[in-house]
Amino acid sequence: MSADAQAAPVTANGAPAVVEKPQETPGFKVFAGNLSYTTTDDGLKAFFAPVQNDILSAQVIMRGSRSAGYGFVALASVEAAEKAVEALNKQELDGRPVIVEIAKPADQKDQEKKEKRSSKRRPGRRGAKAVPGEVTEAEANGEAPKAEGESSAEAPKPKKKKSPRKKKAAATPAEGEAAAEAATGAAETTDAPAKKAPRARKPRAPRPPRPAGEDPAGEPSKNMLFVANLGFSVDDDGLKALFTEAGIDVTSARIVRRRWGNPRKSKGYGFVDVGTEENQKKAIDALDGKEVASRAIAVKIAVNTPQDEEEKPVDGAAEVPAAAPAPAATAA
Image (tube, rainbow, N blue to C red; front, side):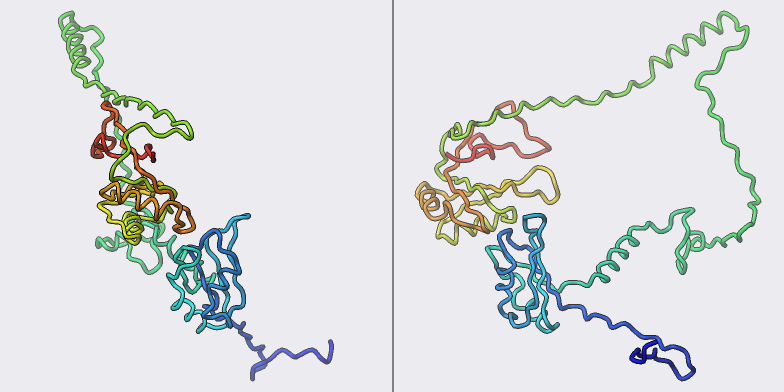
């Protein structure tokens, strides 16, 4: 044994002392979410300029060669992390409002997952073992729990046999009785309710695709605009605000959404009613090709496509007027 080796610490009674491991102080790492796919490590580090002297590292999490849309910034102190959250949460970076929060430690995340799983257990099930400290269903109803190994006084009930639907005829029945039984059996067979066949749905003919470069069939609208290449987070109010901020009067704005899902997700395009042809030209000049949330949007005059008369509303939806712009009719 080397003389330089340190002796293990002992207590007064000679037993070895328990050395506690130093715990890491949580809260130094900050989570940055809702990042643009174009944001880099350097861009994320520059975004945290209010605490740049306390930055230890800044990393955008990648999935292969593409950004996952979030990252982490390690700071030197808890005070710097709290200052970053207060100053930068909901601030825009590369056209997106960034969510800035203090990152949770790994052990806290594991604990939350365990609590979430345990909360899914359905209490009060008959035959299920109660967790120590919980009141069982029998105890809640005033029934005393049975001791282990105690045999039940009641004998198990025998299973009932299903009786046959039709009684068998006697070995030598009279001719009149046999005829009556045959007539009764025929009546029972006739009166039995027939199973209702499932209603067959009429297949919907698919809409033929429009060749690339060809204008949609229909009359150009004199008040409606078609807006495409929108971010999926843009809602009706956001679409309306985009036009009003450019000084254009808006009668209505609507994002086209999918028929399924809760909530129903945007399809990335919509329609805006600006009232007049003059406002249409003004909006196209001001907004066509403008970048919104790192996307160059397209603003064009909508086309009123005639709707097929045989087409009926689906899933209780209101019938669309013939002059209303359909989602497939994009722009002139």
